[in-house]
Image (cartoon, rainbow, N blue to C red; front, side):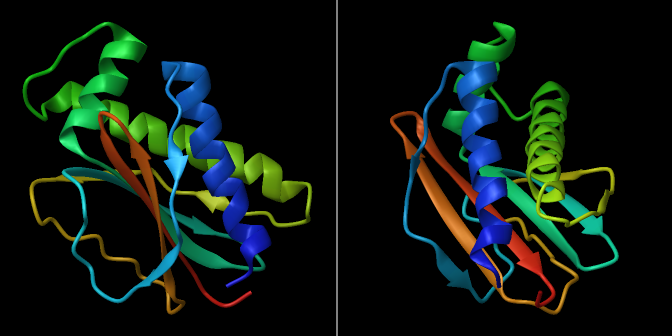
Length: 155
């Protein structure tokens, strides 16, 4: 998978959380993921299709981190993963994908975005439908971890 295609998603996540929640994440080391089990508690998954590519991206948050993001963005302090939390995860997934789409369009990549799906629960699965490798990028914060998974057919 082309690193130039992955970096806009990572940059967009950092930008969205810094701008919207005044929260800075520390990127970890990317790795290949070989299973469907999510590492966190709640995930947003979005599909993308364009003339040059087809794939999907997910963002997974630890419960404690998404609660911190919700507090900073909306002034709400949830105690469980409820509808408001899953709505926020879906919205963050949309914002990150939209930001990446803008960055990638400058390089000639165009794609349409689906509506994000949100899945939660310990040990939930994320099923990417593309035939490419799944790249997992971890991020850390004192309040918890976030993970981006990107899976696109070979570019």
